[in-house]
Image (tube, rainbow, N blue to C red):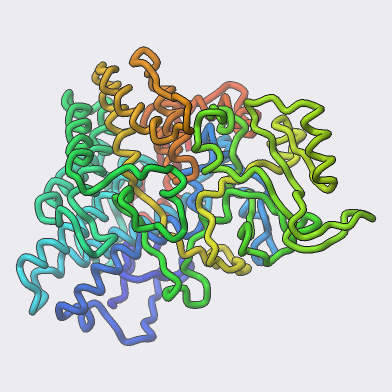
Length: 565
């Protein structure tokens, strides 16, 4: 590829170049966009790379979607490559907001990865007409798929940063200045892109993972829903959102599986509930550096406890507590009725090896940790009975499911989110990208389509239709012999957010949900660390991230910073 000198660090390059070398790109393979993307096969590889670029958003630590919310906080940050310094600074800034600065590495990495993906999409769109041997129908379909991916990147960017530059050209010459477009312009561009994509992509595809009309309508429904909350909203945004969601629901290509737990079975990743996912597979894990960490982020370091060991992954995976559930998340479930609690959380842990607990012998298979249901009685008699049957068990009650640092007084042990467990995962390596989870990351699920429709109907004042959609989700979640149905009078935006938490916990949605609904105050009430750092509550600046300092420093004419940073 050509040398590319650009403002936005490495964000407008075809390939990936380290930040410190952004002015010098050395091509060791001899492959350039000019000599590789010259035929149909090369072009197919380019389009596939646009899909693969989404991994760079999700396969490191997609913290901007989880930290600083009402259902996810930060736990114990584990050292990577022998250091923990920047990791704690990064986590504290995002989770507690008050110290979030323009040089936060997670913010910078996300901004850079998104624009790198956009530039790859730009290359695919702009080269399509020059590829010999590419049929008109296939060209139109592939360009439409790439437009979807580019639109999704812009949706993530505009929600996190507000107005940002709309870049559509394949950039091969030095650019030292970009002018951000307004939020309104970015949203209009996203909608136009998706409307161009919609008629050209397949209604359904035998090639699982390809963009379909269902995926396009789902994203378009989400975009209209999100814009509906803005000051520049159209009066028809919520109606369009509901209509598009209904079209996805009625098209027959997707279905709610009968069991919530079945959606997340490791051997069932291509199921009828998945509208769009980021693909991973074991054959692509060269050097164990291109998997994702979704299976390990939402846990705690159980390997340090007697009866367990570092490197054991077959039973529990190796876990860290980067993304720690808040106590509030657990309280959202009626555990006697809602099957999603047990399908989401792992509450009992059994020893995986013989060991010693002081002078006591532990046997493999002994119950070691037990977390009672937070909303059901667990009496002293229950405790005695459990310990009599399992003398090596540690019972951790709800009041301790929180951090044990900063004077909070918890145990840093809690029911782990376990729906992303990967029986094929290997232990992660000693750097942040060395994750080996080969499970796909679900970006859009059919259940969320119902939730989007419910929210759109609620915003239109049609509470009966909102409750109807919510009850379809809740019916699937209900344990045998129980009832979770709600009345239309029960529907509120807070109830919808609670339902989204119960259904989508850990699926990289939450900050965007709170941002869209202007409900970040929930994080400042329910996230202990966020609340401690901000006794006065949420302020407007926290609804946007800072523009990375590297972007501002490289702008020759002055790139504007978001207010308050």
